[in-house]
Image (tube, rainbow, N blue to C red; front, top):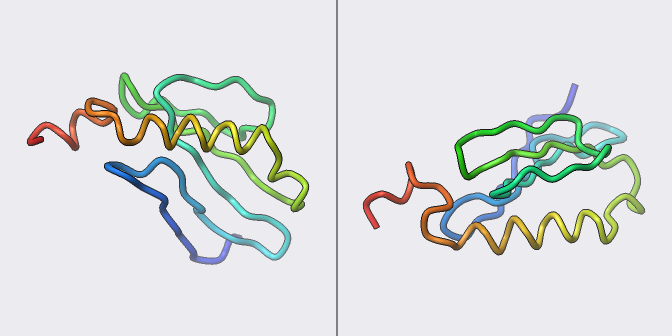
Length: 92
């Protein structure tokens, strides 16, 4: 079972997070405005019409590669766009 650890990365909204740690794994997710197809995602959840949470596990440092970097870039770019999380940003 993962240790209780959570680190969120955010601009206007959270775009990525480390959800937990285990002895040999890091559990994380990214949030993007579109569904990304990759066999590396353990689950993909539509959390709103403009947000998809993509969960993944990192077991080796080498898994933090350009594919993960691309996910993070897409998530970061979308997180500062007005309307990305309409329920959170209505007052803006």
